[in-house]
Image 1 (cartoon, one colour):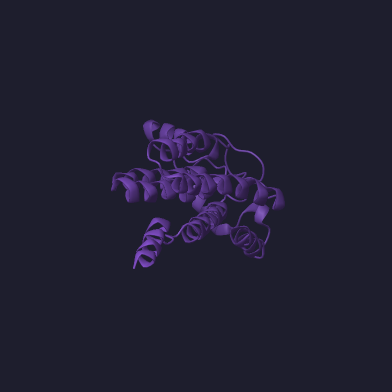
Image 2 (image 1 turned 90 degrees about the horizontal axis):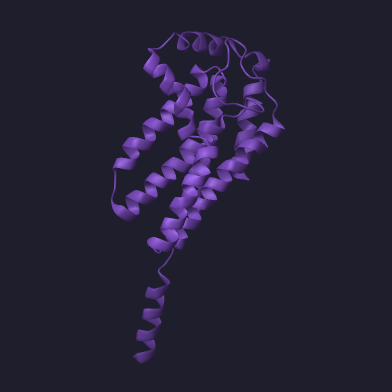
Length: 210
């Protein structure tokens, strides 16, 4: 609820500056500057990149990771944490889109996959909350740091591509990033380390013996 309310607050603040359906002056200027043609290889990457940060691709991939954490690693708590982050990310995006119907940018031809309202960027919400949660879990369980060096560039490129492909206003991406960071923060807090029940039982057993 806190994350959803923050998404609503970001929308109301953005709308207060004028007609957000037409974009604001600085948004239009930024999009025009970002729309300068890239080399074909980079342009092709911009079209492909969003698929690494969308719930359509993340849901099956995260499902497999959850199965691995639960069955192979024996950590159902971590599997549940990752699953909740993914499901929450998936629900936040369409809920906010249904509540705030913002028109897509009209400056250039839109490319790539897009649908529903422009606000907020679901790619920003998903890539920040889900990919960073996965990186944190892999760091805790395996000691791997390389996921951060892989996921963070993917996350940033995915958000950049949504503006470059002319399917989101910059404020959509900023709001999505804020919502994604909040969802990441509240789930980290919710799944903070709790006392080890085995350790507690052991202490009780020792007291009983003594």
